[in-house]
Image (cartoon, rainbow, N blue to C red; front, top):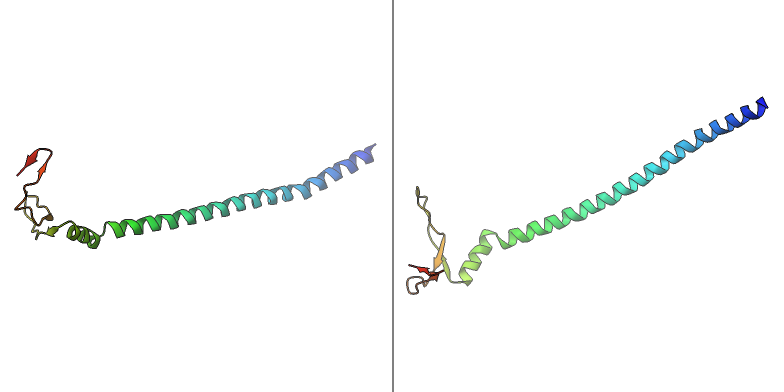
Length: 107
């Protein structure tokens, strides 16, 4: 009887010694796969962010604003820093001829 208990306990101990590292390795591999998937998602999101930043810089750069101003008949005004006075950087080329009214207010 004592022998069977001894052999059973030895069997259980050997089984635990072998199975616990295997279970831990399986868990580590699953976590590693998840980390790899997250890295791929982060990389794709960073690429998308760079593309959006590039489009934003192309649309709102100084040169594109100047092109828009030229296509819509605006001319760039010379701006000098003045204290307590705001200046607009662009105005219509034909603004002297046409009075522009916005929301009922005009000059």
